[in-house]
Length: 371
Image 1 (tube, rainbow, N blue to C red):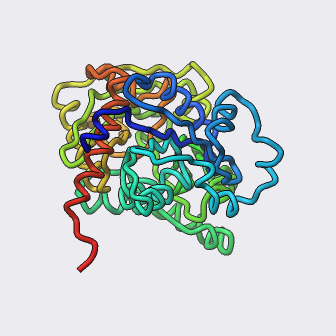
Image 2 (cartoon, rainbow, N blue to C red):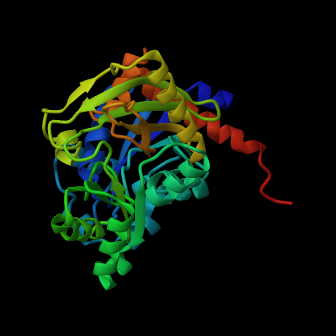
C-alpha cells in the first residue's frame, strides 16, 4: 500500500448479483457485508450485475439491494454495450473489489480474469484457484493427487447423458451404490442437487443437474441406506500461509443440507464448535488447509466434510466433500460464524479479507511480465 493510499480511505467496490443461479444469495451476502463494513476505513461502492449480465450504476445497485428492479433504460440495454461503457457505470479507480458473486460467472475465475486485466486488487482466489474450486470434477482430481480421502464419484458431460442415458445409468450403477447425490459440477449453494435413493429417481435428478451445467457429477452417499453422515465445515483464511477456523457442524432440517435448508428454513441447526475429539478436529483442520493449497486458493474458502457414522466393528471415517472459494456471507452463513467462534468478528473478518487482497496484489509486483 502506498503512502497516499494509507492517508485516505480505501475505495472498495462490493460486486454482487450476477448471472448464476445463486443471484439472490449473492444479494443477501452483499447486503450483510455492506451493513457490517467499517465506513470510517473504507469508501464503499455497491456494484450490481443483473441476471442478464448488465452492470448497474452505484445508485441502481443500491436500489437492487433494497428490492427494486433496474430502470427501463437499463433493462433495454444489451450486456455487451453496458460492458463497453462500464467506465460510466464504475466511476473512478478502485483500490479493492470484493466480488461477492457466488456460482457461475463470479466464483469460477471469469470475473477474477477481468479484474486481473484491470490490475485491481480483489478479495478471494485468483483465476486458477477459483476455476478449480468451482469445477467439482477437476477439484476432486486435485484432491486425489494430494492424497485426500473422498467418496467414490463419477463425472460425465451433459451431451453424453442426453445421447446415451441408459449407458450412463449402467455406468453409474456399476461404480456407485445408492443413495447417490447428483450435482451440476459448476454451481454452489446446493442449487440443482438431488439425493437419489434408487434408479427410478435418477433420470429426473440427472435432467435437473443438466439444466444448470454441461458437466455433471454423481457422488456415492456416505453411510449407506438409513445412515446419515455428519456434515462438518471449516473456514480457511489467508494467502500463502492459510489458517483454519474451529470445526463446525450442520444438522440439516431436511434430508440433506439443500438450498432451502441453507437460506430459507431455520430448521437446520449449526453446532460450533462441533463435538469432536481433539484428534478428529486436528485432522479435519489439516485436511482443510491441504484442500485449500491443492486448489491453489487464496483469501478465503469454506471446506466441507462428511463424517461416516461408526458402525459394528467399524470406526467413523472422514471424507473431504468440496471447497467453496466464495462461501455465503449472509447473516446465517457458516463462514463468518466459524471465524466468530474462532475469535474474529464479522467486521474484522471483512478487514482481514481486504488486507489479504491488497497484500496479494502487492506481491504480484515481484513478477516480471515482459522480457
